[in-house]
Image 1 (spheres, one colour):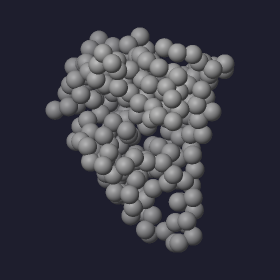
Image 2 (image 1 turned 90 degrees about the vertical axis):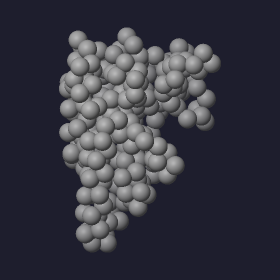
Image 3 (image 1 turned 180 degrees about the vertical axis):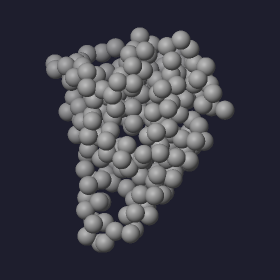
Length: 224
C-alpha cells in the first residue's frame, strides 16, 4: 500500500538477486503472505511490523519507502528488516516467533560476551579503532546487538532502550531480523555479523533451513 519512489523497486530487486540462497528461498516462499500496510508512514515515526491483526492497525509493515531509499544504513535496510520480523512470525503460523528459543538467546549472549572479553584485551588504540568502526552507519546491526549482549557496555551509534531488551524474545527477534536483512543482498554486512556472532549466526542458519515449503514440522521442533 502506498507509493514507491522512482528507482526504489530496482534497489530492492538488486538486493534480492544478490541474496544468500537459503534466505532468498525463505523470502520467496513467504512473498505472497507479506504485507506492506503503509510505505508513506511518517518518517519521524518508528518503522515497525505490527503482529497483532487489529482492525485499526492491520498486521503488516509500516515504514517510509522514500527514507529507506536513501537509508544511511544501506538502501532497502528497513524494507528487508521489517519483513524479516513478519517472516519470523509467519513461519510459526503467527503463533509466536521462530526466533524465540533459549538456544538462540544463549548463543547471542555468549558471542557478545566473547567480543566484550576480546575488546578488553586490546591495547587502547585498538579499542578506539574498534569503537570507531562500530559507530559507522554500516555497523548498525552489530551496534544494536553488541549493546544488547553487553548490557550497554559496548555500543555504537544504533541501539534500543534498556527496557526494550528486558522483554522476553526481543533480543532473538532483532537478531533474526538483522541477520535476515544482511543476508538479503548486503554481503559485507552479513560477513561482518557472521564473523563476530558466529555461534548465533549458525543457529539462525539452522532456523532458515528448518523452514520448509511443505509445512512447519521442523520449525516446531526448534521451539521445544
